[in-house]
Image 1 (cartoon, rainbow, N blue to C red):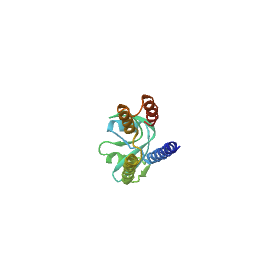
Image 2: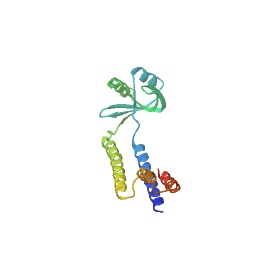
Image 3: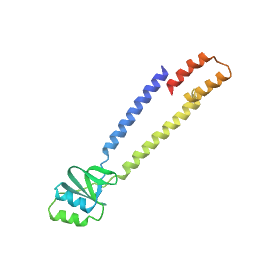
Image 4: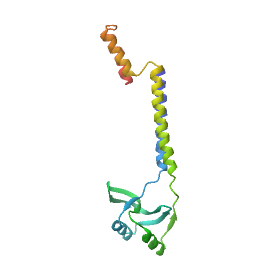
Length: 173
């Protein structure tokens, strides 16, 4: 019964952790796909730009609908683009046309650092608990299987007993 509770707690903990990862990933905005001038002009001519979002480090263009951009990874579907070169002339032209402009929030770089630190922390914690469990407890299933094989070689147990105990250990693997 104790083994069953450990597995249940592990599964529950894993489910909560994965849910937290999914929720954190949903908070990350999609990155703008860089386009060259020719692609930008085609998008602008098709009237697909919704608004310009200005950031301290540059500008992104929000599109009205998702489109596929030919890029390094083949066809990238996106709703945000950025010019791969200087974009000050395009920003000025957009302002002159009275296009909608929004102030973008600076990207919180610390959120990514905290997220990665949490993932590393959880991984290290899991490794540490497994080491402690192996030291204190009956050991890992692989080690117990090797010990069982040694007992069989030394004729301390019968072939039948080996099979019965090995089947239980294989279930743990």
